[in-house]
Image 1 (tube, rainbow, N blue to C red):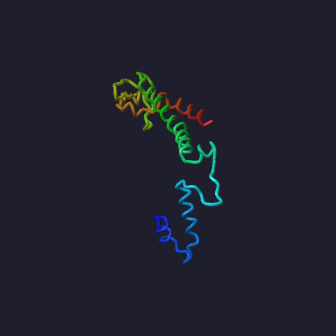
Image 2: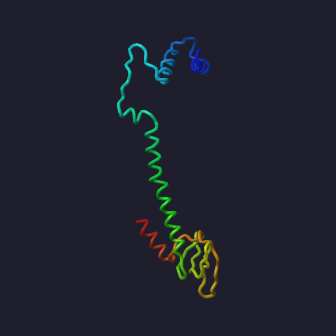
Image 3: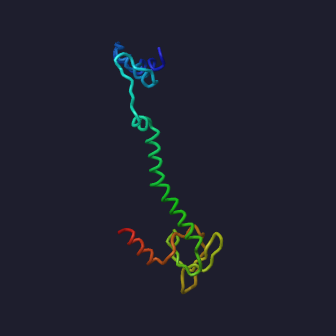
Length: 149
């Protein structure tokens, strides 16, 4: 007996009748690409079956959709954020990812010095990557209101 028949006999106990066993072999022959027995006609299929009959075409479509709907917008957003951080200059109002609002008073390659209190002149040093947006909190609220409409 074949491996498939051994598996079928070991996993199914449909009584002592083995009338279903030829069906298992016919399915195995069909999957292996052998010609069907008497009464069966070979399938032509055409271009539709050639494209959609296997899983390659739907898989490629899924990957393309995932690229254009998920990965491409993230790449664009990352590029815009890098450009925003590269163009920081003194007296820009910024908001950090932690919600700290301040004015840029000094920049270096990897960090930015922010003045967070005008009365006392309190300054903090943050990484450039910690800056989420340029603009005052009021402008940020207006932008979010426009985006939600």
